[in-house]
Length: 404
Image (cartoon, rainbow, N blue to C red; front, side, top):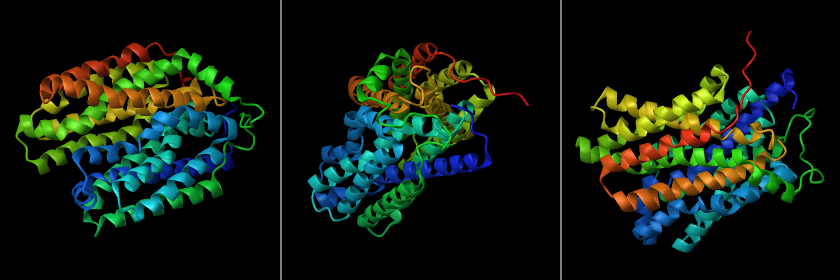
C-alpha cells in the first residue's frame, strides 16, 4: 500500500485512531468495573467465589470462540460492518445488564458484551495498518491499546465511589452506545485511494484461513505474545499478595505499589512502539525488551521497598506492554498476510495468545506451585524469556524509517 502523506488522509487517520481508542476504552470498562464492586455483587446476586470468577472471565469467552471468525468477517466484509455488528451486540447486552436480577442474566450479558472487545483485539493490526505507514503502525496500535489500560485505571479508581453497582452498568452501556454511534458515523475501512481488498468478491473465508494457518510467522507471533502475556497475567493476579507476604505490606500499600506496574503498562503501550520505530528494526527491540521483561517478571517484585521497587515494577510493566503492542502489529507486516488477510491473521494470533495467557498461569503454574511466590515468579520469568526463541524466528518486520 502506498504511503499516505496527504494532510486530509493524515487527519482522518488520526480520527480513526481516536475512534478505535475510544472503542477499546468503552468495551473494556465493563469488565474492569466488576472488581471494585465484587463484594456488592456477591451479596446482591448471592454469588459464590466460583461464580464471581466466572463472571470476571466471561467477557474473554468470545475471544476463544470468535477470535478467528471475527478476523475472517473483517477480511470478508470490512471492519466497519463487522465491528459495527459486534458493538451493537455489546450495546444491547450492556443495556440488558442494567436490569439483570440473576446470576444467569448477568453472566450472559457480560459474555455477549465481550463481542466488541474481541473484534477490536483481533483486528487492530488490520485497522491501524490500513491507515498508517509501516513504521507508524505499532505506534497507532499502542495508542489504541492504551484505551484499554486507561479503562482499567479509571474503573479501578472510580467504580467503588459510585452510589450503586447499577450506576457502573449504566456508565458501561452509555460508553458502548457512544462508541457504536461514532464508529458507524465516522469510521472508514481505509483511505479512498488505498488499494486494499475489502470486497467480498476478492476475499474468501477459506483462502484467508489457509493463509493465516499456513503462516509460520503467525504461529511464532502468537506464541511469543502468549508467553509474555502469561507473565503479565500472573503479575496482575498475584503481585499484591506476594508483596504482602514477602515485603510485609498492608493490603492498601500493596495495591498502591502494584499500580506502578499498571502505570508502566499504560506508558509502554504508547511509548514502546515509538522506541521500536526510532530503532528502525524489530529484532533488536524484541531481544532487548524480551530479556528485560523476563528479568523483571522474575525479580522486580523482590527489589527493596521504596523507589527501587516501584521503579522496577514500572519498568517491567513498560517493557512487557511494549512487546505485546509491537507483537500485535505483526499480521499486517507479513508479506504472506498483509492488509488483505490481517484480520484472520490477527484472529489466529489472538486465539493462541489468549489461550496461553489464561491456561499457563491459572491452570499450570498456580495449581502446581501454589503460594510459593519466589519459585512461581522465577518460573514465569523463565517462561517469559522463551518469547525470544519465537520472536527471533520472525523476519525483520519494519523497514528503517528514512533519515532526515
